[in-house]
Amino acid sequence: MLKLKSVQTFYGNIQALKGISLEVAEGEIITLIGANGAGKSTTLMTICGIIPPRSGDILFMGSSILNHNANEIVALGISQVPEGRHIFPYLSVSENLDMGAFLRKDKQEIKKDMEYIYELFPILAERRHQAGGTLSGGEQQMLAISRALMARPKLLLMDEPSLGLAPLILGQIFDIIKKINTENRTTIFLVEQNANQALKIAHRGYVMENGRITLSDSADKLLSNEEVKKAYLGI
Ligand code: ATP
Image (cartoon, rainbow, N blue to C red; front, side, top):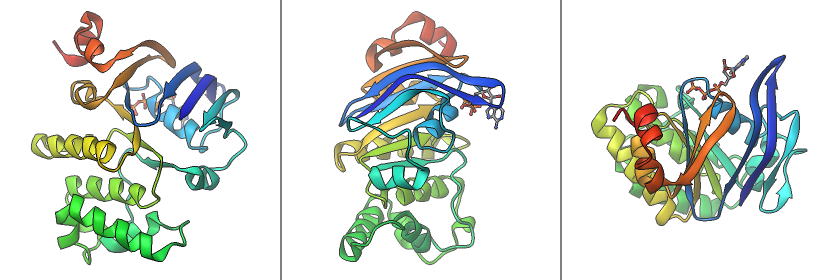
């Protein structure tokens, strides 16, 4: 579904991605793990057209998306749940969800999708008229995920959904990510610092260090890899 070929991305003279190649197949949950500053968020920003790469290629469903802007990339079927959620604090929960469906015209289907979201996250149904900014951190993360789902993505990019969440909520968020993948058949590319939880729900994973992919394997194998255990799992 998604293929990155030798992608290099720069911020001015600073090279953040030093030739990244990776693949995500339809139906997979793929996780990208790595330390602070490794280049994980830059990888997502590059895929969704916010920071175009200087060289390399990005293929989505077999075609290059390099010459598409961020809006066009959403329309093709890639949505991002950004790090830090970035919900619209003064809009209600239901208005935030409407914003996620901004590019869609199929009103009946939008209504159905909103009902599905409210089944997935009953707390959002309860709070549908409440301003987004008044929700707890966990609820805002649920809203950010839901808003991205309202675009009906084929591929969902998630940047550190567990960041700053209480342990109890964290488990719920990972359960929901798994459910979105299995029930809603959405392919997921998950960037996480919580490598342990991410690898437990993922099919495969990539390890990133200093702008490069240094390791890739099945999630099970990465979980039992001694280097990964020492560097990322705290074991
Ligand atoms: P984190 O987990 O802290 O978000 P990350 O793995 O997502 O880290 P990136 O945010 O992609 O890493 O950063 C990769 C590199 O690019 C780092 O060296 C960072 O300092 C640099 N960088 C990121 N954003 C910018 C920017 N706007 N301008 C200049 N350099 C940047």
